[in-house]
Length: 624
Ligand code: BES
Ligand code: ZN
Image 1 (cartoon, rainbow, N blue to C red):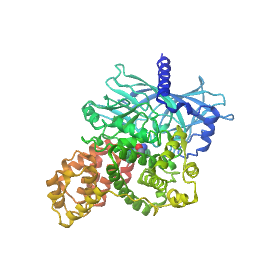
Image 2: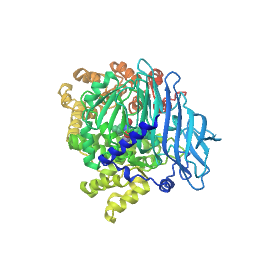
Image 3: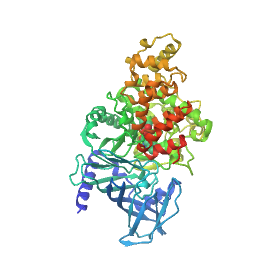
Image 4: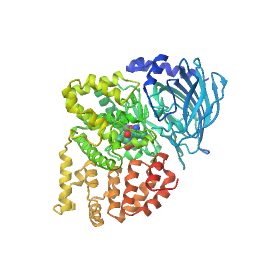
């Protein structure tokens, strides 16, 4: 009997929601309300038609087979149908659908033609009174969301954002559609299963795990990981999961998570998801982090030994409000997720580590933004608008510094225009009033005009249309200043001109942001001898900080600095984080070392996730 523990867990969750003040009482519950809400979204990256029929709850039963790399599962959805509904539509990519049952009776379902990226619509006949559809299926061994890591320690993880959830679960794969879920998952013994839901803290001897997520989430936040991991608590609501070899290092690195959580709550209101845990994934994880509710997925490359890269945790944590509570309606509105999150991340960093640290971070992000704006303006200026145009494109194309950092500077401009106190209370109310719902750019603009920029003067100062619908960086972009970064720039100039010797660089006094600034601003044409001097004096190749190492490797490529190449190769074979791969392979191509890039890629490619190979195949012209 699986229903009993589920009911118990739900009761428990309701109880703890009541005592933690979670906002579940404000969830849209009525049928008409859910359908009405759906009418607003027009998401061309999903075949679903929520105005006809929409899912409200998923009961997923799955068995995970590492040998065949196949998930065999049933997805039973509770649905709400409109008065004239005749079908419900789901998104699928490469799913082998074996049967569909509606309210207990088998039906004639149909899979439409497959489109690249979008996949296939699965159409299931229903009536207005239909209550539940149950889909039996198997995933493909090549499912785009999944990475099966082989070896002594097999590991599986998913990455659903933006539209890859449909490669492992048939779903209405649109960020505007929210549903609760429960899951019952069988995995090989000796591994733990974890999801974006209530999670175990110990391995189950029989390999069976039950999960509950009783707060409605969009499909891109569906997540599963399976591996031999351990759990370690680091605070009252926080903990880390990692493989045994990394658990001590992870517990040390992320020991401040509870403090970050409290800082976030002090800024923008109660944390809504009860627990905030972090799972350290294999190095092949294509991102730095992914904000799966209750369980952030993170790359191990942020374990530096000195807690210097925790800004990433602040970022994923901030998504618990911006993104997970208030969700972008479509991928064209992605800046509403990421721009708000970078702003929130910076505020958490400022509150825990001080303004000096957060301004260094802001300075680095400004430089990255300016570089990327220049680059995008050359090819596709429209992609520098906050509001994107991703129709008929892969939503992944929207993952640039624009949504993140142009978004951040836009919010910073709002803050500087109205004052911090006013802006903070605006944001707090914004999260509160839109909890567990969706937001699109036009509605946000209306909300902003009503609640913050409510005079012609304020509107003129900000210039919404330049920021949101215009190219590049508007002239009123806030300026950032960091004395420490200025001193790094001065040292760099002095060193490059010969006025300062290598041994006089204050390398050992610099924190990661300063070291990164120095290395990433070295003259592209620096000679290999100059790099050798730096390496000899400061053992840069030996750094345990992957951001510093990354900047060093990129410059090593540009300077043809031979002693770095072995490290470059092992870095690229081991680490699948796209943010590192694109610039490193890109630098090899730009500097006539495409043969080297291809030789390394041939070794590394089998270890990468589809999100990374998708980008690298294109960059390297790889036959896929
Ligand atoms: N939600 C994103 C990751 C993402 C975005 C995955 C779009 C797929 C499509 C996550 O919160 C993120 O932004 N990660 C960043 C880290 C951050 C500190 C900027 C990353 O992985 O680099
Ligand atoms: Zn993010």
